[in-house]
Amino acid sequence: MKKILYTLTALLSFAIFQACNKSMEGATKQIAIDASIAQGAVYQLNLSPYGNVASILKQASIYTTSNITTISGSTEKIYSYSASTKTGLTDEVVLAITNEKAGRRDDCRKAVDSTVITIKFNIK
Image (cartoon, rainbow, N blue to C red; front, side):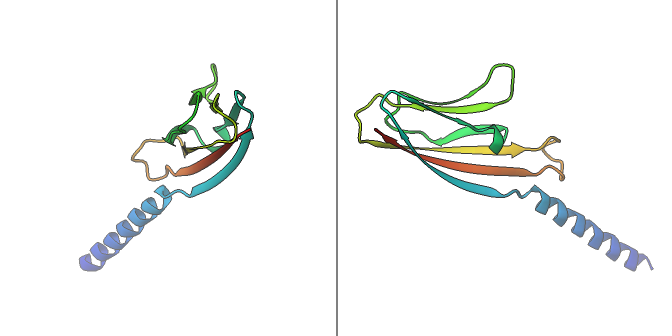
């Protein structure tokens, strides 16, 4: 009887552990944006719909401004880009945004969804 109880406990523990691992796996979305901007103009993208933690994975190369800022008094994140270079050039930036749900880092109910956004700029 004890052997059956131990076996059932082990199987139940394994099933719970597997469920926690699966819930931690979030979906990664890939988004590509083609943006044409005038020389000296500012392009802005609100990142808040994609998540609450944002970073630049691959920085643009010919930018005057290329950064992520948080709007004062809120958690809204905005990516801004501008270039004061010659027209006819292209640039690219890759952003990573994650949506970390509330909870402890080791909480098995906490799922993390992520989005990778690639923006290709055509400077007109």
